[in-house]
Image (cartoon, rainbow, N blue to C red; front, side, top):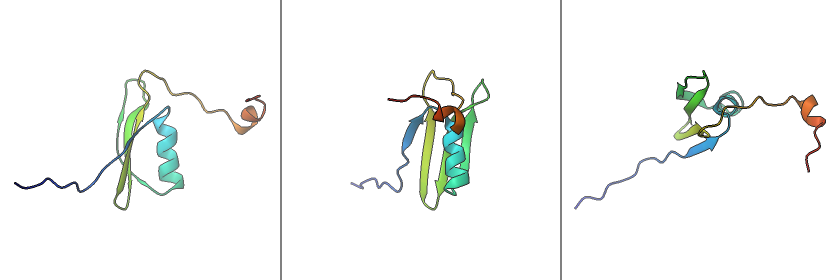
Length: 81
């Protein structure tokens, strides 16, 4: 009997904001945007990025709307324990 062989594994990572993660991987780390699906709210539901032989899929946290990221100035005024 022939054994199936795995040629690739792609992790699926749940994140609060697919746009922010996609932007970081593409703009900063040099990945290519392979595909993505935009939901009814105009935000990515998921996207896949690739670099070399690696692919990663990012999926938005179910039922959660993306939050606006605070500016550095705003974040500097927060008291985070």
